[in-house]
Image (tube, rainbow, N blue to C red):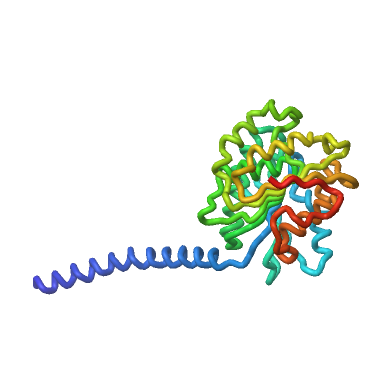
Length: 291
């Protein structure tokens, strides 16, 4: 009878062990599989953030320009709601290795406090995108305050140990808001300079300023755009300041400026990248300052 009792205890223990081990094994296998998918991913999206008061449709004309070429880019748009929910539209086309993702916000208002909120919301969108599309690297484009959101995200939420950002293009980004005197730093600029050591070291940054009248783009002072050097210079792999003039150099039109389009095409889009030093080979009619 004791033998039967011991056999019963043995099988009971075995059943309990298997009941615990199998789910754990399945969970581990699922997570290892997801990690392997991300590590082996060939997907390298370009992720766009519009500025204040702009929706996820902000870059549509720019996308039309890029997609008029041979290679078509899928377009997926995410609007992050105030309650952290995501509204997603669009789909990834088969064999598209460089889709366009756009992340906007229900609360797209201006102001430093909102920019900090939007950076957190952007981090939620990034978690969603990575869990659904399994990429391990990307490039970023931010227009106006979109560049501020990107900078805050990179300093506060980005982890370069499991994700690589290859390049960041900021367009008309007011790093010192409307201040024209670089000696008078806003609280936002002070905070970004203070946290700049958290920026990814291999990042290549192109900061574009538009000049309608050689002082500003109609909204953002060129000195405010140039203040980005206090954040990125000597912290990232390369920082290049570019000034564009001519047609579509107004703040809201910069994303359609032919020179800006060419900069993004030449230095961000996969099928048009050149094997050259960052900052070289820009189209004529613009001033560049490599830091």
